[in-house]
Amino acid sequence: MRFLFPLASAVILSAAASAQAATFSYDYLEGGFGEASDAGNADGDVIWLGGAKTLDGKFGLLGSLGIIDYNGGDGLALRGGGLYRQSLQKDLDLFATLELVYSDYDFGPFSDSDIGLAAAGGLRYAVQDNFQLEGKLTLTEVDPFDDGLGLQVGARYFMDKRLSAAAGIASDADYDGIYVNVRYHLK
Image 1: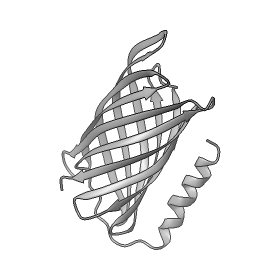
Image 2: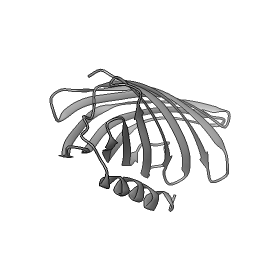
Image 3: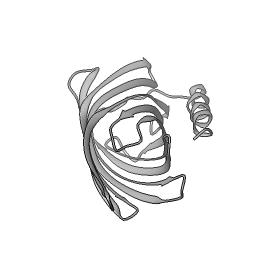
Image 4: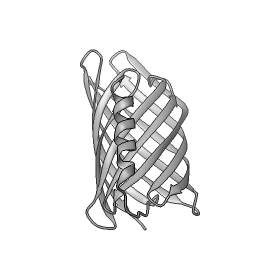
């Protein structure tokens, strides 16, 4: 995980030199897939569906449902909460989210369900009209998750005004992974 923080900073900051005007959408439906590995090289898969809807120019709601298959175990995570966004300049947005998270997992002899919180803050930067860089830090406090700080960095390409795809890396205290998603923008 140590290499991800400098990498994320370099990617986000290096893009600041050559941007064009952008409009960021916080009204969308999305689906995605991710793979994760822990320090013991155990692998897992995640599929999720989610969405967000702005209520006005700065505030909105978001939620998602994730299904997890990890080392013969399985589980789900249901998330919902609020978002805040602030334009820092015409091609750079700051965003923050606060979500209530319900998790339910069965892994062999280990079975648990819990409710907790996840708070995140990040940046979206438009390198050009159809290409954006995204990064965020998330603090999660939900057992049986590994509570703590996580980092996600990715790139989003717009096929047209309504359809985009993203790919990136994610890491927290014990897990590293990759993800892809497709997003349909409602506005």
